[in-house]
Image (cartoon, rainbow, N blue to C red; front, side, top):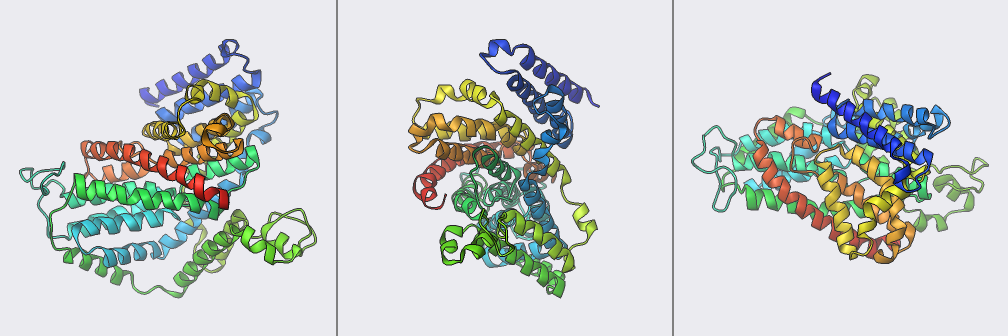
Length: 520
């Protein structure tokens, strides 16, 4: 273990010890509450410093919660690892493996480049749109890893192969060394990383913070958010934020010179030809993925469809305590986790994936998600959440609602620059849910509505860290190409952090005021 990692473990242990030993001055925090808080301090420090691999720290959480007696049994402490949302993310990973195995994701990307990329700026836009769209289904890490070679290939094929840009650019100038990246390359690589993070907020399976908040709202408040419900909030955020990121990169900071993109389009066409036509197995995979998406949307439209059905059929499809066609009530066949899990054996039966394909998915993220949910459960089931809400958010009680939401967004974005977005969501979700009722009047809604708004806001903001290579895996992948230096990422990302915070605040407040009362 390196000295930096040893220091992180020591600081985490000291922080947990301090949380325990200073419990009395903490103002009435119960014994289990301060032990839950001690576990949170330990996990937060290790997650931020990465003293241990993130999933390993997640495995420490149930051990500490059981040792401290926050939960009476290890089985209870491990409940978060068996949360349905963990299996929803597993579904997303398997779907992504199937799409990647048959080249469906790359076919989509190259076709978008051919249709949209008619100029250097539109070429950057095409890469970003393809990345954001794929990131709604595939993990942002996997999407970026797949799209970065696409971005490098199509931008290298443009005729603008000299570094520099037009007037007003903040990027490399004409006198820079010729081996430096062109503005179109810089904009495309940064755009790929940023679009992957932005696209991930569009669906509940797009990124783990979304799933964490959905699970926590269900466990804490009994409030269910369907796939369609999240799409109603997440998709507008993508639609608003993605063009702003493109404008910042391709128009303001790194505007490419006007040049022919014929070479780039030829590169995309050649790549499509190399992939060849989709074989029968690939078509079956595409059909299954399309069917899953349709059923997820259908399952979220229960209020519109259920009244048209008989009671037994309604219970069978959408769940409930009444009798189903099988004679007893159950979860409902259109529950999005049930649909997702059913898709996995369907893909295997169709020959779309083999176990070797599934074995390579990101199991570490699933473990991290489980540990985060266990920690969030511990904080929510004790008085630790109430204490944290008083300590952290009470100064914001009297501020205007816009400033309140903006503070939550910007604070989460800044924190996400230094820590895993999954870890941040696990720490913040119970805090924001617990703090919601005290801001109900300011937000003009019920206590439950305020909790939902703040928690969803935190989840969206947790995915927006654009300034540092360590902020998100997409940033790290783009930086790792060696074609984007830290200064350029910091310059563009710092501005985009602030712009995104403003846009997310305005968009979410508008959606929760106008749209959410209808669909939520």
